[in-house]
Amino acid sequence: MKPLRVLIVEDSEDDALLLERELRRGGWTPAVERVETEPDMRAALARGPWDVVISDHGLPAFSAPAALEVLKSSGRLDETPFIIVSGTMPDESAVDALRAGAGDFVSKQKLARLVPAIERELRDVELRRERRRALHDLQEAVRARDEFLSIASHELKTPLTALRLQVQSALRILGRGQAPDGDAALVSKLAVVERSTTRLGELIERLLDVSRVAAGALRLSRERVDLARVATDAVARLREPIEASGSTVSLEVVPAVGEWDRLRVESVAVNLVDNAIKYGAGGPIDVRVVDAGEEAVLRVRDRGIGIPPADQGRVFERFARAAPGEGYAGLGIGLWLARRIVEAHGGSIGVESALGAGTEFTVRLPKRGGAPA
Amino acid sequence: MSTPRPVLVVDDDRDIREAIADVLRDEGYDVRLAANGREALADLAHGDRPGLILLDLSMPVMSGTEFRRIQLADDALAGIPTAVISAAGAMHDMIRGLGIHVVLPKPVALDALVALARRYCAPHAPQQGAAP
View 1 (cartoon, rainbow over the protein chains, first blue to last red):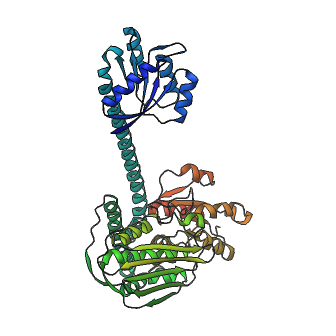
View 2 (cartoon, rainbow over the protein chains, first blue to last red; view 1 turned 45 degrees about the vertical axis):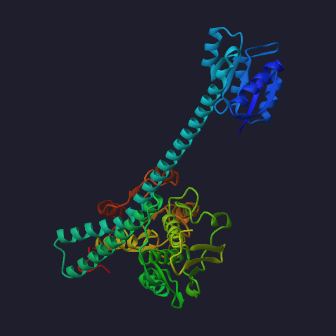
């Protein structure tokens, strides 16, 4: 038994009952309200929603074309088919009504057509709904892709900048034939070039991961990994930026071994420590790893400016910005990807922060084969 | 007779700071570095007035935009020629709104960098040997 909410515009109670009976024959359980005037129809629509409106053509104080206008002006015509059932409607009026948006016209002498007509109209409503949803999803996907491409190109320009400058400078030096200590200068430039290309490679991997995650195609390759080792390596890797920032890192770790994707878990640790350096304002940074039985826990804490409460929820969003209207500050992909990687392992990542008191990120990783959350 | 003045480079990316410093020093200019707006302000408070500021906009702690507003409000700093090093594409309206007329889009071209430095910072004699 399918429920159907039917608004009937009809002055004859008997005719309305006939309609109701026909609807039951069609397999519906109709919830019916009958109205005869425009104010009553408006009130009924306001009480809505309705699945279908069935209207007689001519009533003492109302008419099908007028009722159609009322439905249209309520904005519901798209979702609520309007069907005219009448004994005495001239053909031109029927055509006009259909052109004005009525779904169908059924003669009272051939009421058997009513049920198929309603079924067809309801199917159309559903199709339109699906099409709207598909269009919206498509637009959303295109928008996200465009945003990703713009972020990616922005991110890639950074290592490219250092690279290009060093290469151009090396060419200049060689071009001027200027090279007493030349080799040393050129070697140090090429070392920077090398570092930049490594960074570029890593960045491209990260961007690929972002697009894999978006496509639901992130596949982990698990192996035995010690989170303490990962944390220590991350800190070692970032030694120079740490020194340059004036921060000191306090590293307190105990072995905590699990089955994880080594490279991706490393990228999470590096991202968290890197953020701590960037936002830590030169203060102390704590990196801790503890073994919590079923899971391993990594905590990275800085004593920087902190994250305003209003922004804390957004920190893991895909393209979160450092401040509204500012250019993208390179944070967005890192934390979003970190969360996706951690969740793909069945774990969780959270943030606690207070303005002026710093920020702490906590990563929990189930040691064995956790399913994605 | 022009007095040589340093270039102040403000960018949160360490490799970019060092690459710009390296290449400008090779060309004979003094370079000072800052990783964000706050460090740049501290540098300006303590050092010689630079001839040119190269400013990245998107930086943590204090962005380029915020720095620029503070710079413009300070008579001692407002007149220092400032150019934006930018990775973002269409921010020209915003940059013009900051009173800045020169943008070096990333990846930055060495020639443009050197031309700006030459215009505002008058170099020392070109160095023989490795950069400092």
